[in-house]
Length: 561
Image (cartoon, rainbow, N blue to C red; front, side, top):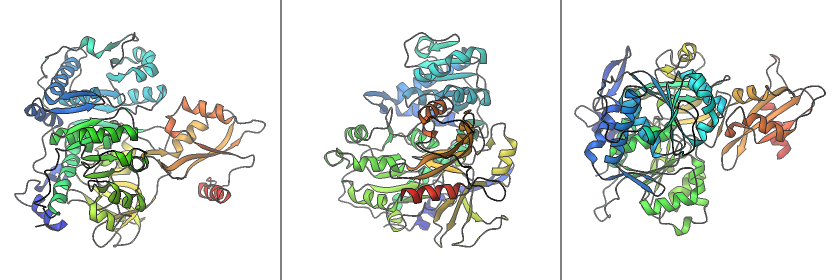
């Protein structure tokens, strides 16, 4: 018999439950934690050994078993320690597209107590160099495209590199991974503590450079356990159907970048924890995704809303078998209520819509909405398990009652411990032990969270956070620019697109093709504005001298309307 949400949560997280929650002191603060959380990511990857020769990774037309992946993780870990001298606490960067080697490298790094630094694969050479220097990485593990962008600088920076899927000559100090890997080399014996640093994921900032969000092993694993617990809770809320055919084995499709928290934690590490098959795409292609969903019997589709829309709109959708899918959704952006309904109505196996509201700073975990709840409340990001606490506060930090809009705060063991070498930013975001999200929202009487606006100057483009100040800083480097304002405009597929209004310097002109090329050398391509408004008069300003972006945006929308 189906349980209510509260009954299922109590059964799973109460005393003696498989996801029992107790209070412990973590980093000096009393914190609710799962008693069954693995002690470290090293232990998590160790668990793969028991799964043997069953298939684990499917990359396009390649397939690797759990045994094969574990052997590669061991050998890379041995290489890092014995050849490159990596020790506990050292930073090792990963910068590549979605390849099996990304996962193997991550497993090796965290298993020897080093810190896995995930660099954005879309970054330009200067941005990669910034990430390497900011994190203090000793070694970079990357692919051909990334070594071509930054390889000539690595020797002078004192950084060694391991390069995958590349057969050409390499710059000094760089090695082809397969040339130096010793098959069968054992995993080094290293002690790893739950509160040791495990990951640094870079997140764009409201000022010029991205910030490195640092998570401990406990934080990453707490988020991971939260995702799994939520899945079990939702399964208990369904009436069992004795006539239903057996469900296919769980298989995730990895369609978002591994350097994003969604790809890394709920998808990749979710597969590691549960022993699910992980079907990988090198890059997003809706037609190829439909082909792999049919061929590999994928059960869980986790991406950004634009990807779900792409699937439904693809000309092959009606002819492909998607009956294995159980959930379709993800996070990274709000999902339009109409898309929620389209997902619920159009998958031939009855896949249900799903959305999660999580941030890099929460390791992707947060309120979630699924199935009947999501159809009933399509504008809500959902509710949390008691491992996380959600509150809404006013300008003075006071808690607000149900239905009142304020800033959303999140607390729990899955929060980052801070920003790498940014004590002031850490204090501002986490000073009271809860994360100030910068998002404005409210809670309803059932505990469902609704996000209504962003306090931060940010554009959410297809799941990528684009902070306007970062783009403006790059635009201001152009000698022809006097002033600039970057903001977002609605976009049917991406949610928002990045837009810039600029005033040239007196006597100067702005060539937009040259401007785009100029920016692509400085910032990732997804951050470069796709619409430009060049005006000879000054941009509108308020009494304090601040550029009035909302006024510019409203005028543009009125002109387009």
